[in-house]
Length: 286
Image (cartoon, rainbow, N blue to C red; front, side, top):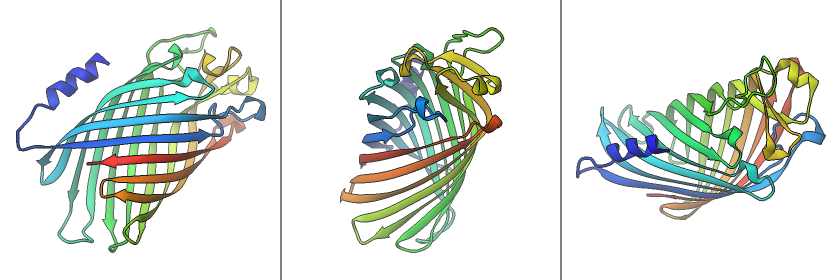
């Protein structure tokens, strides 16, 4: 946490001509497979309140808009309180139009780094994400973007419980390709949709399961779901996700969004699972 805060303090006091930006979001979510489990007896479900806030400073860099930001996020769960967390991080985003006019394409890049503190020690860690996208507006009502992303996470402590296996199942990395689009209706309504394919590591928390054990690269107890749950890291998995949602503009800088995301994961050994996340969010950007 101290590292991220120190970098943020160094970045934000900059030129007086720079502009401040604010991004805040509060979301209610329901996840019908929190544990990412295959067997019905291991599937857990819960509601959560998730908060996110970012304070940034905008500059012009390489003929594009650059925003350096500090971020904080937190999550509170109704039942599985071991998943409650707080994270503090820094990020940078850059966007440039590749031409003049409404339909000119744009290029955007984003990077972030977080220190994450969970109610259960096994989940504590640090994470980073990088993304690059190319987008275009096809008219006054529709725009779309295609992009690629890389995500990385390192679990702080090796809590090995099985000889010969790492105790860091929450140390993960993956690469993604994604496509997203927005379609506006009038001045206040927007339909958004996205699809993504991610290849890399995933973690599944279940009760003792010999089939998962044989395919795992790391294993540790996961008391967030109960004393008999174990977190297994699976490598080389493919996750396809699909999102559709509706946004209602409450005013120029705020909106109320509702969305559903379906995720389907295929891993070696036939260890497949899927789940849905439903969310309602209040978003403010300035």
